[in-house]
Image (cartoon, rainbow, N blue to C red; front, side, top):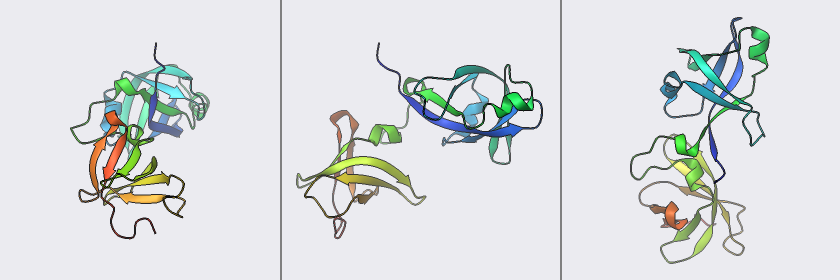
Length: 178
């Protein structure tokens, strides 16, 4: 059996009211998914194993956050015990993305190569700036003096994304390695 990989889709930040509801900050482009969920899988911050699965008895939006009522959590002190818990989905529970779109976890670890065949380094993070994403590359020795290379994810720079082949193909703009 392959080990399940999990992706964070939200974090419980506080109790909400005194009836055991919790306030969740969504970390997903589709926060309305919380209204469709029958249960949530909670994790303590650095734990690879789930803390537990909780049935969702109710959900609503409140001031940009999601408020969940979880089965068995019926007062403020029980809700307080869930503060800082992460809500995760396994990667096989994720909705498929349209062609050409990728989840961040699918990009981390991909090698960044130029059209001329130079291997720059490995993607370690994706910054979401609003205008366009930016790949953070940890360069291989000798590529540049920079500790990291920042690659803007725009059509004239990122030409191909090939997770199945383990790399991203880029056309470098002048000055990116200086």
